[in-house]
Image 1 (cartoon, helix red, strand yellow):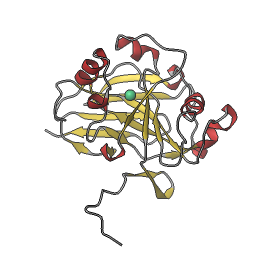
Image 2: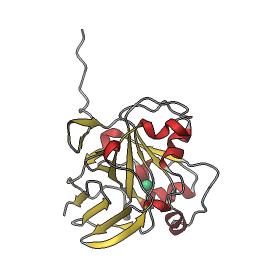
Image 3: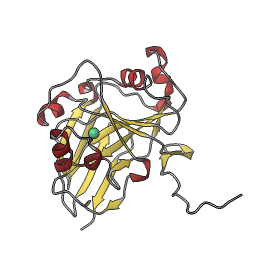
Image 4: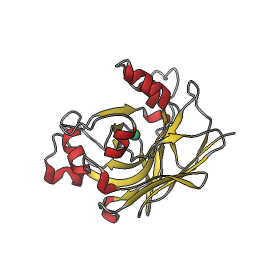
Length: 230
Ligand code: MN
């Protein structure tokens, strides 16, 4: 057996509340413009015909509690607080009755974004990768099993920077609900364990600076935090 020339790092392993095993980060799918007020603040119309997606690379993910550098190439680094859905079984072309049964767990996530690059590329009708898929750019809090938590409409999703609230909404504001997203996305991918879906961010996104501390939460889930190094 030949040796590999080099070895890639192990996947990021997210703790799961009350479980000794961890959840390995595989693919990361993100829903765009899933809260109307956020789409409006970004100057976009809502497309109610179908959700759309971008992806972020698994090696760029970090766990809640990390301290990370301010990223290169941006002067407008933004937070986006989101509900993450962790897939627990293989599903393809899911029907609405089976969609939620594919969910293993839920958790808080941050979709960190080089907003200046995202908007520049968007305006040139180019892909968003430079804006979205940055090193240390996706943050995951410990997961809570779907058996122990449900994404009810009245659950609050919120984020503060240095103790000051910046995002504050409820899951009721999501345009595409979790079962609808899984039905739609599984028409394009064979979803499988390790797949995580970030379900969009509410209004109130904004910039952060070196030294800032971000703290987010969703009612009933483990909180999330991220510190930008000075
Ligand atoms: Mn997002």
